[in-house]
Length: 189
Image (tube, rainbow, N blue to C red; front, side, top):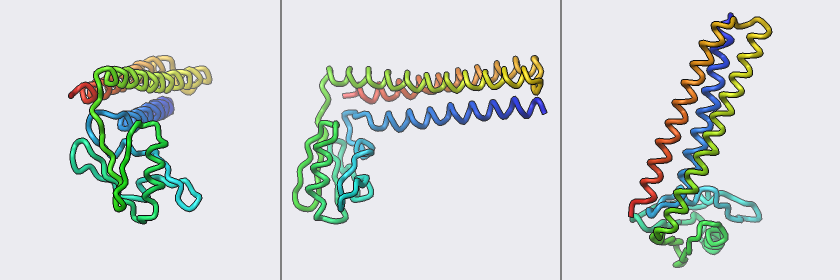
């Protein structure tokens, strides 16, 4: 029974750490690089019949070349609403509407802006490392409780603490790898 309880704590910690990794990947996709990506437009809401609707549900998004995103609304009457929503977002992009599609040119990033984005990526990564460490802390406190109520012997607790620390180290290393990949992507001209 003791092994099962400790194993459940390990599984819970791993699930929480994996969740932090998934959130980091989503956050990093939203960070603008010099290349066009439809992921930049994730989170943009367009007012459609008085209802905020995600842009990707109202239109087809494509990147015909590395410096351009094309938004083709399914309903052409929403073109101006789509354009307004993109302008109102904090992406700093300037869409142009030709009556059929909205074209969004992706300007080249300046060296200064690239450095700012790298700093932002590092802050986001650190926030997610904190999430991984919180999962470790929660798991260790659960193990302590299990030991105090006699469900897990002290030896099993120490063994599981080492496993959880190893898991934490693995996830922190994965976060560092993702961060360095994104930094390289941003700094590539």
